[in-house]
Structures are given as C-alpha cells and as structure tokens.
Length: 184
Image (cartoon, rainbow, N blue to C red; front, side, top):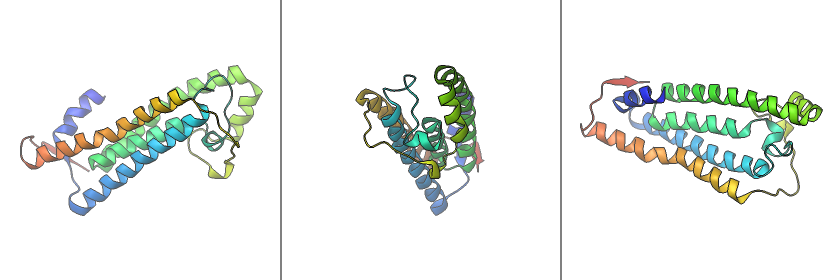
C-alpha cells in the first residue's frame, strides 16, 4: 500500500495553503513529539520486562497498548505534517488496523502466559484508548537503556520525515515536481 501511495503523494499537493497549512503542519509536529515522548515513556516501563512479567503501571495502567497508541498518534502526525487531513486519517487508520492485529496476537500470548492476572488486567484496562483515571505508578522504575535507545531512534524516524516533506513542498513550489492532484 505504501509503495503505491507514496508516488501519488509525491505528485500531489495538500489543498490547504497559508496559515491553515502551517497550523496543520505544526499540529502534526506536536503529535509526532507526543509519539516520541509517549513511546519513550512506555518503554521505560516495559523495556526489559516485555513478555517476562505483566506490566500494569505507568502508561500500561491506562491502556494495554501504549506503544501502539503512540505509534498511531505519530502516524496521524506524519499525515498532518504533510498538510493533509485525509492523509492523516488514512495513515492513522492503517496504523490502527496493523497494530490491532498485532495487539490481538500479543493479548493471546499474554493471556496464555499470565492467565488470570492478564484476564483481570484486560477487563479493567482499555485495549487502545487511554483512560487517565486509571493511572497508577511505581515509586521506582528500572529500565533497559538499550530498549530506550532503540525506541528513541525508532521515534526519531517519525520526526525525520518532516525535512523530506518540506523538500517535497519546495520542489512543488519551484516547479521541479509536477502537481497532478490536490488532497484535502
């Protein structure tokens, strides 16, 4: 899907212009930063414990899949950085679909590994959308520096897309790349 969509986006230009376009881009950058911070926060809790123990504190107390939630947030942010509400919605839906399948497989694994503990956690904790009222925390969190580094690099890729999008805009404005269509 990405291989067929990317050329279309390269030859397309967002409909929004001026201040509206800039506002949409800034909103996208904010969502990408939220993605980066959220993914790092989540990995601090689960890093070296993943699949070894059931993590139910920090972001995992509000939702079962914070890494996936924040990745979807980043996907929407990338679409907004492009300047398109439609692209943001599309990227968000595709990311959600992919992560929902992955989360279902993880839930099956965790259910078989942790049994009643996971079932109780699953009943009280939303699958994907956070419920801040459920937040609870530990006094100390021991994390994996390696997992944090890897997550920081992964999350930085979301932000690294912005200069490419700006270059694309520049190539459209100066006529180097044709504009075959506009996207909302």
